[in-house]
Length: 400
Image 1 (spheres, rainbow, N blue to C red):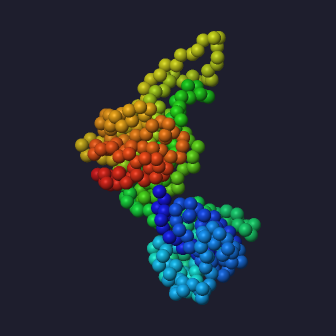
Image 2 (image 1 turned 90 degrees about the vertical axis):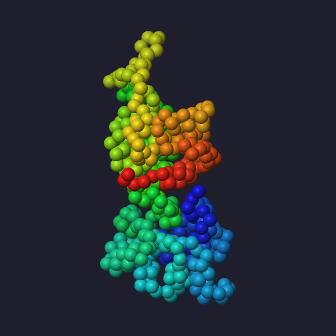
Image 3 (image 1 turned 120 degrees about the vertical axis):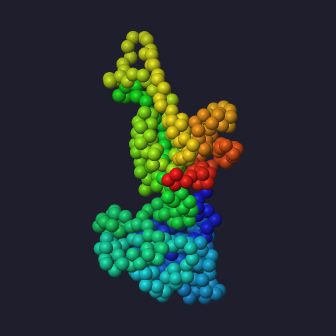
C-alpha cells in the first residue's frame, strides 16, 4: 500500500508552462489512494483551467482567496484538512514568495498556513534557476524543511535545454510519498540480491530460470525509501535500477557469490531474493555448440556455491547481520520453508509458490520465522517488500 493512501493532499498549481503536467500529478496521487484538493494561482489559469481539476478530482478547484461562495477562511479550511502540500510547478516567483513569507493570493496564503510535509517541484528557465536570488530562496526553503524535487536537465518549452525542466509526474509523486514514509531503516546498510543467474553452456546459450528480478528491485526501492543505504547485487534483468541504490551487476552464481561475500561484512541486513541456479555446466565450450549427427550432447553439471547457507554459517552467535531468504516451492510450501529456515540459519524465510511469484507484479507469500508463520495474502511486490521490512526492522541492529 502506498504511503499516500488515505492522505488528503493540497496541490498548488503555479503559473508556468509545466502546469499542464500538474493534471497528471493529481491523477497519479489519486491512483495511489490520496484525496486531492487543488488551488491554482491566477497565473496558472493562463495554462490550465479549474475545470480540468474539477473533472479529475470531482471537487471544485480554487483560485480566489476572496471566494464568497466558500464559507469561512478558505485557506485555513484547506490546510486544516491537508496532510501535506505539493507545489507543482514551483516558479521562481512562487519560490520567492514562500522564502519571504508573502501571502497575497490563495496559493501563497495556503503555504503560510500549511501543516505537514511541503514539497516543491521547481520549473523555470536555466538562467532563472541559477540566478543568485533563486539559489538563496531555495536554500532558505530547504533550511526550513521544505523538500525540493528537481529540476532536471532537459529540453524546455522555449526550445532551449538545460537545468530547469520539471521532474516527471511519477518520480515527483515518489518523492512526495517518501516524505510520508517512516525512516525506520535509517542507519542500516542493506544488501539485497535480485534476478536469476545465467550459467553459460557456450558463448550463446545458458541455463537459467524465469526470475524477472522484480521482487528484489522492489525490496531495494522500499529499503532506500525507508532510509537504508542499499547495495543491490543484480543478475541479468530488464529493469531500471532504483534511484539512489548502489547496483552491482553479475551474471553467474559464482559471480554473485563473490560479490555478496565481498559486501557481506559491511551489511546489517541481507535479503537473498535472487533465484540463484543450484547447478552450472562443468565445462563451458569456448565456441558455439553445433548439432552433429543424430546424437544429443550430454551436459555434466556441478553444484554452485550455496550463498544463503554460507552466509548463515558465517554469522556465528551474534546473528548479525539479519538474514532473510526466499523459498520458491511447488509443494509443501510452509514445511519446506521451515526446513530451509533451520538449515540455512536465517531469521526469516519468505515462502511463495512458483506460479504466484515468477515474472508478475504481485505475489502471495507466507513469512516463516522462528516465532511462527504469517500468511500475508496477495500483495504487490512493493507492498510485500514493506511487510518484509516491517518484520526486519524489529530484528536489525546497525554495526553489531
